[in-house]
Image (cartoon, rainbow over all chains, first blue to last red; front, side):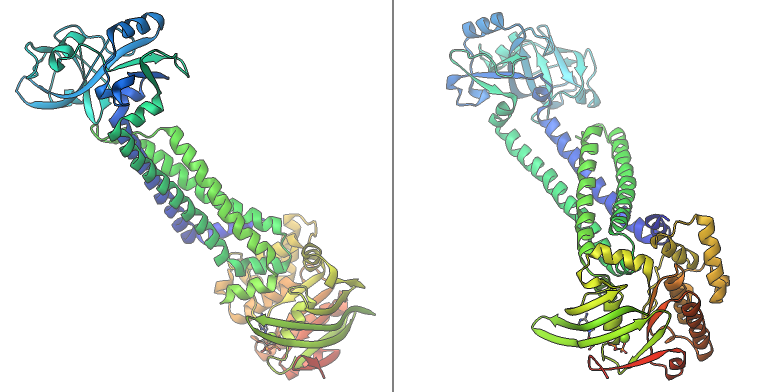
Length: 344
Length: 224
Ligand SMILES: Nc1ncnc2c1ncn2[C@@H]1O[C@H](COP(=O)(O)OP(=O)(O)OP(=O)(O)O)[C@@H](O)[C@H]1O
Ligand SMILES: [Mg+2]
């Protein structure tokens, strides 16, 4: 006889309430972590989307890419020696569209490379988000530091830097706008540990992120938000399952008094726990994935199925721990004591 | 034949700083197939000695022997096995499992006691005993919808359906009217004799004493 199932059937309301709490808390966790991920994506998709590799600034840059100027001869040598390398620069700036409306962008320029958009002089490639602002292919775009005009050549998906859409421009145009001759950064793809290059300081992707002050600070808060959510909701789950069983201690006492095996009681607690969490989490995963699809275009939101499944597994494990802890307590107590505790 | 012996059993409850000796050395022997009634004032320790005998809590001191085996030395698991297959217990308040129907309560007990019956055989067995306690019309009812007396009758059925060697009953007729009480006692008496079940029973009801083979009176944790 399956007593676990019999109880669920008889006390539907109780189990539905418990299930909805787990559903709501896990859904909240998924959505918030999707938003946090989205924000972090929004801040650095340009860099995050690069393959694994090594970043270089010059030694005097004080670990600040804005101050870095890579000597042209060094740059030529690296680009010659390494097969998958590019020199590039990023600067925040503005463009004016055909109706003279100003848009904030992150100008990006690079040497010829598969890793960055290739744009000719007088051309500009923009992040897709600007298309939604009404800019079309073939439009004329201006910048007050730039003598000529840009023609919009196309759009790219999901290229953001510092929450601004990226604008790829030709290196010559970039040099004119910012009055510099050198590039800020060199990126060498492929190696775990990049080659040492005289006069340059190397950074892994992670180290490089930490040199971007706005990024590392923001990332820290976002990570904290997600971790606090996971830890607190996890504890909530454990406490819920613990409470559910402790509150039923009188019932377990009766079953023990009849001579029901402790292993059967554990089986009852575990299967009820699994039943509720699996249904609630499946719903929650499905709904949060659905939300990924209907989330408004401009809203930074990024939640992979993998993340939700990983979080779900953590929740199941924690629920299991909560149920087991209460089980141990019930295993230890004498039947009569359990019944008496249940009566107060 | 002596089947059950309680030997110098003491029980002390400790509540914080307060120690209360509830049983001060109880000696009892029960003979197979006989009914022994325990009487005494409220608080004299009747339920306490009954639950210790039934292995639902442990004595602080002394020995409990069932079939010459010392239950005091046994592990929780060993005692559980005895409880499941050889003991039946009727609580002072019936303590049915709230989410099982009358029939399921009794089937669970057959399950737990290790009688290897198929579901169909279990149902037949349950139907028999429900008839005996005049509850066959409430087979599919849940405890919450039963009257106090009906609950108590189901609890008695649950305590004997697996044909235990020992029956412990804590005021089994307390919530029954006098006719039902007599019916239940006749039932217990019959079972005790036909199945040779040994019964230890607490009661307040003077009328019930006529069904007992022995009457033992307790006072302040001692047998008079
Ligand atoms: N778990 C416990 N903790 C502390 N004291 C207890 C506990 N169980 C019983 N007692 C005390 O032991 C004494 C005897 O209790 P017991 O239940 O055995 O009495 P009883 O003879 O069955 O009484 P009644 O006729 O009212 O059922 C009482 O004073 C009671 O307060
Ligand atoms: Mg009592």
